[in-house]
Image 1 (spheres, rainbow, N blue to C red):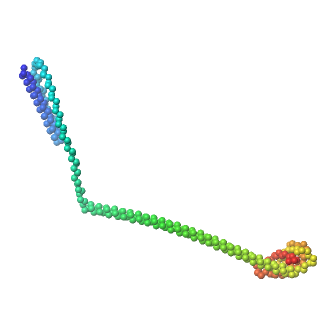
Image 2: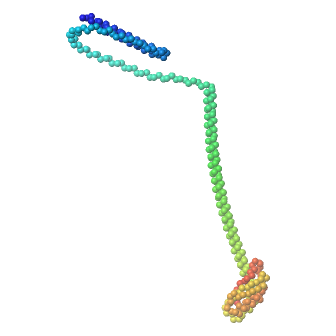
Image 3: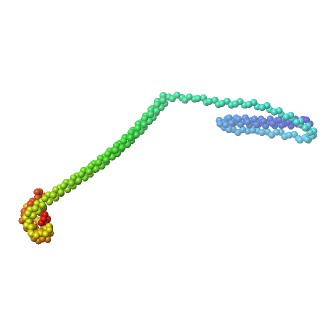
Length: 278
C-alpha cells in the first residue's frame, strides 16, 4: 500500500526534470540565436518533446483518514522596529569647469581686425552724423540770415518808397506853390498891363455932361502884338449912349495900346471895363 505513492512521485520528478531540460535547452538556443543572428544565417532549431509514460493502472482509492486536528492559533507577530531616519541626500557636486581652449594667433589677429573695423565704422558714422548736424545748423543759420537780410531789404525798400513819396509830395507842393506864385505874379502882371491900357484910354475919354451915377460899359478889343487896335465891340452898354460912344472913340484914339513888360503876357483879345467915376 505505501509503494504506490512512491512510484507516482518518481514519475512526476522524471517528468519535471525532462520539462526543465527542454526549457533550459530552449533558453540556451534563444541566447545563441540572439548573439549570432546578425553574423550567421538563421537555422531552424528542432526540439523533441517526449510525452510522459502512461500511469499505471488505477488502484482503488485509499481509505479516508481521520480529519486533521484544528490548527492552533498563531501568535501575534511582533511589531517591526521603527525604521532609522534616512540620511539627507548629498547636494549635487558642481560640474567641473571646463576651460575653453586658448585662441590661436590667427583667431586673435582676425578678432583684432574685426574690432578695428567695427571701431572705424562707428567713428565714420559718428563723423557723418556730426557733419550732417553741422550742415543742418549751417543751413538753418543761412536760412535765418537770408530771412534777416530779406527783412532788412524789405524795410529799406519801404523806407525808400516812403522817402520817395515824401520827396514827391514835397516836389508837388513846391511846384504847386511855384505855380501859385507864378500864377499870382502873372495875374498881377496882367492886371498891371490891363490897368495901363485902361489908364491910357481913360485919358482920352471926353465925358458927356450930366451923367447920373457911375454906370459901367464893357468893350471887347482885338489888337495886334504891336498894340495897334483892329476891332472894338461894345459887349455891355452903360445905359448912357453918349458915355458909350465917348469911351469907344477914346479906345480907337489910344491905338497903339501899351505893350506888356514880358511877351508871354500879351493877349490878343481884351475885355475892358469903364466907369466914369473910377
